[in-house]
Image 1 (cartoon, one colour):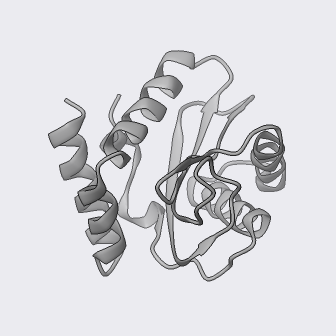
Image 2: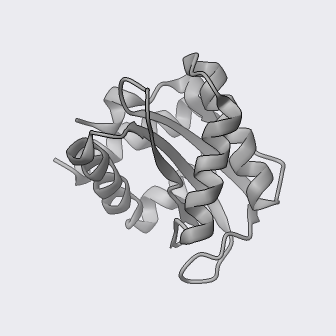
Amino acid sequence: MKIQDLLQKNAILPDIAQTNKNEVLQLMATFMATLYGLPEGEDIALKIIERETDMSTGIGYGIAIPHARIPGIDRLYLVVGRSFEGIEFKAIDELPVHLLFMMLSPKNTSAEHTQILSTLSRIMSYEEVRTKLLEVKNAEGMLEVIIKSENKYAD
């Protein structure tokens, strides 16, 4: 499974104004639930925030990959957000987060869940990718960078 199979242009929030971590997670979870017609957007947000409380998904370099396994959903879902100002996320390098990749997966899709997390981590480890994602103007540009980066670094 590839990121580009999950992600579409309208699933990208290119300019998140909120700077509070829980508000951003709530915004993205609600956005995801609305976009994909998922029930219980509030419950999704609570699960993501609960997971974040256990351990931050801020992986460093301004990247966070909040994720949760949700009973009753049929496949993986992904939305992307970008914050120019940055969000205090308790990331492992203690730097603010500018790029967020929120993923939901069914309870029983361990391999695909892990594969997408691994691919995101690999792609985002390249400074040129992070820089381009912060420089492009809109969601379409962000999607293009993600697809090209996945094709270049994750095959």
